[in-house]
Length: 157
Length: 288
Image (cartoon, rainbow over all chains, first blue to last red; front, side):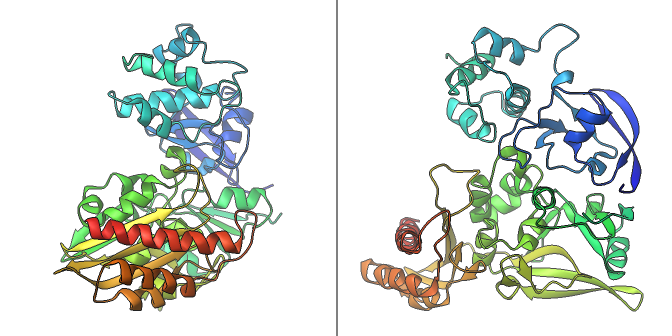
């Protein structure tokens, strides 16, 4: 076993104090130690975006980030986006536009889409495409995904 | 897999450099290259794992006394949106815009991209065009020593550099380009990002009275390291850009590059792209 270190950070607004192996990724910490399984493991090498989360307001691939780097930082995962049973407007828009099929890429896709809109409320469709290029979806063909994001920024689909 | 015996996350630069001096240290910053290399077994951890992300002074971009300094922990996103870089070295913003995805740009650091020393490392090409030097810090006689080395002398092979194991690359530094500086970058690939480059070309220099001066040319993914194109530079230096001089530069570029056949492209195709991109970038310089 690798050595461990103690970390303090917040996750979805809740403070966490936990001892982690120093060679663990953030994704494994979320799924295996904090039981937050909304964030998905797919490629494990930063190509697909299924594991996207926000750290200090910036999206990253949690499969590439070392858990030790969370010390003192604020994390938001897909579980932190909805309020109880009330879906976040981005989640609702994905549902309304039929943008979800198998759903495996969706936690990452929705976190990234929400980040793009927060950063630029006047996002164009072209900017959406560029912004979502790190999120791979094998079902939807992306058109309905873009329609869903466009509806949130008030563009016509 | 080797075992990590010690974890350290210094907040002071001097401490980080001192720890490195003891040897046997794996440095982690953004993790975007290290994690996949570990997972694939291409690399194993040393006895000490040092996370340098808490050394705040390494996260800044500054312009002082005509010198631009980019700390090693500056992310590709920071470069993409930096006002200083946009004003004085826009070629870096342009390249950052074609680098991986948002999620990777938000984590990947400039120091990591340089030290990983991939022949296809995208950010290295504009840095070569800007003529940057790297600052390497080490611990000697109870104090931190810093040496500066030009980036074009830094790479020795794929993944290999002149950085000693006890040295930390703390910044890239370069003279503020003149107001006449024009820099252009071109990367191959069917989409703008998340693409390991097949060929990258960067060209920069001062356009004065219709002549192209202080020319620097850099090629990526066409040899064992990212490289300066010295034959192409000589073909262009002091010349007025026109159809003849551009064609001479295209021929010279073919002499500079020594691409290989691999999974991403054939030697023939890479040679073809080098010529096409060199011509395209020089035409862009003319239009500026």
